[in-house]
Length: 145
View 1: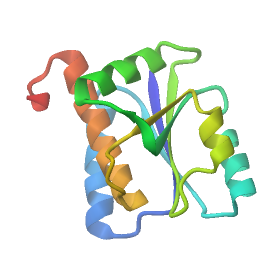
View 2: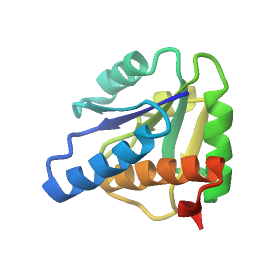
View 3: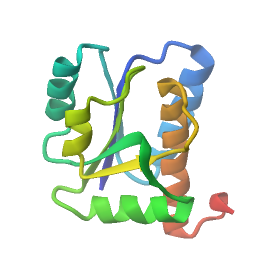
């Protein structure tokens, strides 16, 4: 399995970038994990960019109105998604205006990190921490407790 986080916008804030790099490093102890930062663009261009960067992968769109999951359910969702197709799971994070509706509808799944609205860069950190937590859950390791 391989994880790809495809997000609109660049993280320039040094403390946030350091936290992201820390969690990406933790996830990479379990499996390959890539981060793709897309330029903020009009919806038609974002649809094209998301499609190009996730071709052949199982896509999961992060949406405020997506399915609410607890951490063990999220871990099982990743495990199931990783067993499909080429074993690549791509998480999609939109910019300030969210993910274009066409991209969201085309995703294999839509999940919510919370009913709260997060800035998209903070949502990326929460997502990567939850991916790391999911890996520890799937391996029965103590971080998740």
